[in-house]
Length: 118
Image (tube, rainbow, N blue to C red; front, side, top):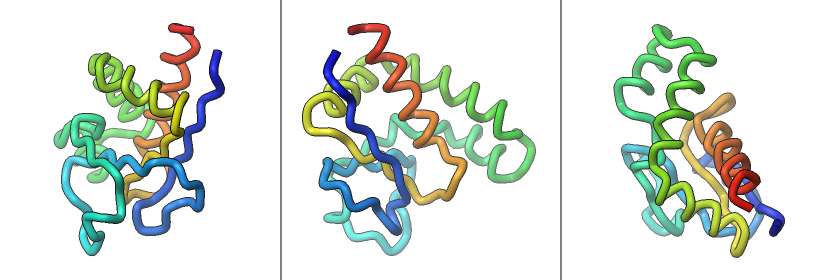
C-alpha cells in the first residue's frame, strides 16, 4: 500500500507541509483569502446541526465524532478522492477550529478507508 501523507491544521495557522490545502468547512472562514487554500470541499464538513450541537455543548465530543464519522463514511466518492490525494500529492486538511476537530476524525476515516481498500 502507498504511504498516505495527511496533515491537519488550522486555516489560520496552516502547517508548513507543501501538500495541497483542502478546506473542510461548510462556511468560508472570516479573514481568510480565497488563495489561502487549494480547494474547498463543504461536503466533507460536519452537518450544520451536528456542528452547532457540538459547539453549543449539547453534543459531547465522542457523540460528535461518531456521528460525523458516519456522515463522512457515507460520502464514498469524496472519501475515495481524498484517499487518492493522500496517496499521491499528499493533503493538508484545514478548518478554523482548534483541537479536537472534525479534520482529525476525517484523517482517521481516510486512513481506515485506505487500509481497507488496499
